[in-house]
Length: 306
Image (cartoon, rainbow, N blue to C red; front, top):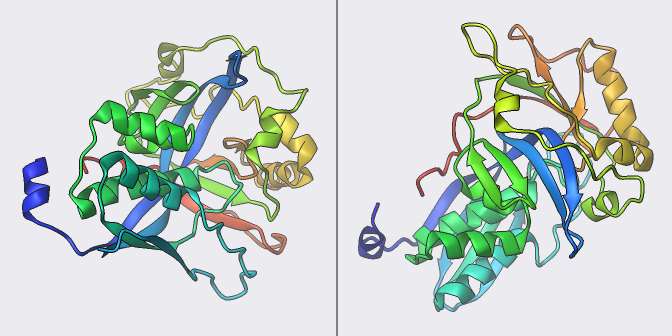
């Protein structure tokens, strides 16, 4: 849709805007820049575990947010998001960059666990940028939009890219990547992990040999060209397991059910591929506060093309 079409059809609200989570199929740290940022290589895969956002136009220029209760029976009371969460910061950044006098009220149904390595906050920010371009009828050149996204967080540009991707640099070098349909079990223990603590750990491996997309694709074999989702490793996992014992417990839980697990991102969520269209394993005995979900990877980002 052209920018003139946006201007011709002003909107008052956008409801049920999805913000999907991601899994890192592997995550290698290949170096560190002089400014302290880590260089990485990873495959980011979108999954169908999503937050949902709702946007209502404000004409007074204010940006407000409401946390909508998504708890199920027996869930613990969740902590309120900070007033300046990534969705609000994204809205304010886009408002300033475009010079619009319009504002927005954001309703956020938070389902993707926080401090899980699943990119929930970054995905909220990206969906916010995409939705507000439509709601406000504003545009930024792609390069400026991507720079704005990167200023919000290293994972935000990926969620703007529209699909699965091979990601390099500090998160800004994104190459679209096709992945076959697959199902996974994702397990999030009660404890979370702050990303900064993982990356600042002295024991973190920061010199993994550079991989290639061709090397990753070489794991595809047979007529179905299915990908070996066990490629590489997560360099953050050993440090994370030292900091959070529940990660090791989660991996042991998967292993006891004949599933090969791996941590995603900086944790604390872990995941394993479900083979042969298997259902979720028996979840009896799962500790209180732990979340488990069967997920499928997405064909594309639900907002691709916005």
